[in-house]
Image (tube, rainbow, N blue to C red; front, side, top):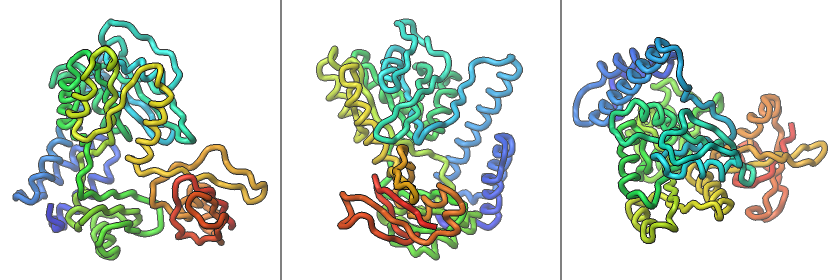
Length: 382
C-alpha cells in the first residue's frame, strides 16, 4: 500500500477512528472508501474496508433483530485479566472439557450437539498471568450461518484463539473449515514477515523499537492520522508503507494454537494435524496432562503476544506485589510508573530494578528510559 493517500482520504480516516457507534463507523467507512484512489496499490485496502463495512452491516442488523425479538442470549464477553483466549470448535470437539480443565469450573456436557447456547468465561492463572478463557457455542459446518457470525465476532475481539479439533472426526477438515471462516471474517492466524505493531499511549510521543526507519519519519506519518503518542514495533525491513498499512489495518492478527482432543483414540491423527496446521502450534489435550497444557498455553501466550511480567516493590516496606503488571515487551520504567499512578510518572526520580537472571548486579539504579524484561522487580522512587 502506498504511503501517499490524498489528504481528503486521511481526513476521512480520522472520522472512522473518532466514530462512537457502529452506525457512525459504518457511515465514516463508506465515506473513506469513496475517497480512496482505486489502483493496484490500494487493492488490499479497498478489500479490507469493504469487508469491514459488510461486517458492521451484519452486526447492526443482528442487533436490530434482537431488539425486535425481545432478547436472546448475549454473545458479548467483557474482557477481564491480562489476556482473553477464545475457544473455537465444532460439536463434541472437547471445548467444554478443555474449558473445565483450564479454569476449574464445572460445565454441563453431553453428547447432544449445540448444548452451549452462549459464551461462558472463566479464569486460568499461570505464574502471575491471568488468562480469561471463553468457551463458545459450537460452530455450525455452514459458511453462511448467523450463529457462526456471532461466535466469530468474539474471535475478532479476542487476544488469542484456541482451535479445538476432535482427532476422531477428520481433524484436518475441521481445522481447514475453521480457518476459512476466520479468514472470511478478517482474522489472520499467521503473522506476516514484515509487520508493524502500533500501541497508542496517552503521552510520551512516538517511540520506535526495531527496524531501520527514522523515528522522525514514523512520527510524521502517524501525525497525519491523528496519532501523536504511540509505541511502534518494527520487524524485518519494515517501510513507511508498512506503517501506514498498520494504521489502516482491518485484518486482525490473532495468535492461535490448535488443540487436539481424543488423539489416543486415533493413531496418526496428531501428525496429520501438525502437517495441516502449517506452522501453528499444536498441543494435545487429555485430562491427565491438564496442568502441563496450562503451562504450555501460558508460555505460548507470553511469547506470541509479546508480553512480559513486571513485579513492583514497595519502597517503604520492601514488599513485592503478588500480582505482576503484564505489559508489552519494549516497555520502559516510566510506562510502569504511569500504570501505577500519575504522580509517580510526573515526580519520577529514579528506579531500582532486580533480576538475578539478566543483571550482573541486583538491584541496579536506572532512569525512566530503562527497558524492562520478563520477571523484573521494579521499585520507583519519586
